[in-house]
Length: 496
Image (tube, rainbow, N blue to C red):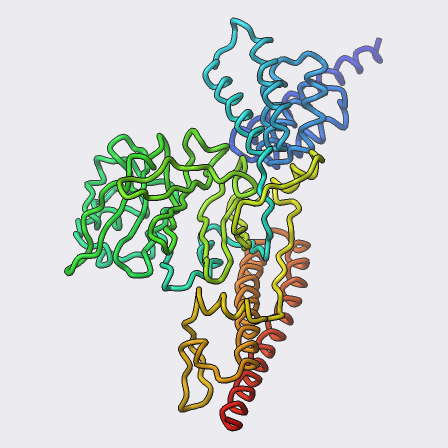
C-alpha cells in the first residue's frame, strides 16, 4: 500500500513538474526566446522521446531559428502520424529548403485535410502561389561568379560597397543632413521614428503618415543632379521618390513612377550610369520572400514593368541593394539568408554580359547554387593583352597616376611604354583586391565584436590575423607595382 501511495505521489509530482516545464517553454516561445524554448523541449524529449506534441513544438522553434534541417524530420513524422497542422509548417520548411514542389503539395494537403474548417484560405492560396513562383525561379537559376563576400553589421552594410563616386553615392537617411534635403520642418516631440527629422526636412507632414520602419537608402547620381529614395504615401506603403538638384537646394520629392510602385515597400534604389536602368528591392506580391531585387528600364515615357531578377540573387529571405560598376566589371548585393538578425552578407560578384543559365540535371546541385551554398569562383586574369588594354581604354580611360613629381598621367594613352601600361593594369587589379581585403578585415573585426561566445571569438580572431597578413602582403604588392610602372615608363621616356 505504501508503495502504491509513493508511486501515485511521484506520478503527480512528475506531471506537475512536466506541466510547469512545458509552460516555461511556451513562455520563452511567446516572448521570442526561441533558443531557450528549444533547450527546454530538448530536455523534455530526453525523458519523453515519443511525445508528438513536444516534437511539433520543437519543430516550431527550429523554423523560427532557421534550423530547417532539424525541423524537417520532426514534422515529417508528425505528418505521418496524422497531425494535421504539420503540413502547414512543413510548407515553411520545404519552402526555405528550396523544395518548392514539396512545399506546394504540403499546403494543398493541409487545405484538403482542414476542409470546411480552414480558417485562412486566402493565406494558404497565396503560399501555394509563392511556391509555384519558387518552382519557376529555381528552373531559371543564373550561373554567377562570386569574387568575395563580407559578413557585416546590418547598420554598416553600405561600407562594403566600393562604388566610384562618378557612378553615384549610397547613404542612409540618418547620414543625410537637413541642409542636404532642404525645406526644413521642425521636429515634433513624441515621434519616435529615427528618420523623422530627415523626412520632415524634405517637406513631409509626418504625423499624418505612418512611421518609416525599415532602413532607408538614398541614391545620389554621380552628377549629383538627382536623388532617389523611399518615402511613405498616404496609405502607409513605401515607394521610391525622386528629388532634383535646384540652384538653391533640392526639389520637393515626387513619386518616381506608378509602374514601379508595389502594394508594400520599395527601397534600396540604384540607377546605372546609363540613366535608364534602375535596380531596387521590394517586398510586394512579386517577391518570393522578404525583399527581392527587381530591375526596370526607363523607355522615354515611363519605366517598364519591374522584372524580378531571380535566383541566386533572390531568396525566401531579404535580398537587396544590388549595385553594378560596369567599368570595373564587378557588382554587389546584400542578403540576410542564414544570418544572425543583426548581420548581413554582402556578396561581390562578376556580372554576366548576357544572362548565363545554370545547366545541370542534379536538383540538389541546383538548389545549392540557388542558395549560394556553392558558386562559381571568379577568376581575374593577370595576363594583359592588347584586347584587354583596348577594352579598358574604351570603358575607363581616365586614370590618375603620378610618374614622378612633375609628371601626372590622366589617360592610359599617356603611357609611352606598352610594358608600363600592362603593369599599370596589373596594379589596378592588385589594388582592387587590396581594397576588398581591407573591407573584409573591417567586417571580420566587427564580426568579432558581435560574437557571443569565447569559441566564436577565437575562430574569428584567427581569421582576422590571416586577413591582416594578406592585407600587409597586398599593400607591399601595390607599392612594388607602382615602382615597376614608374621604372618601365621612365626608361621608355629616356630611351626615346
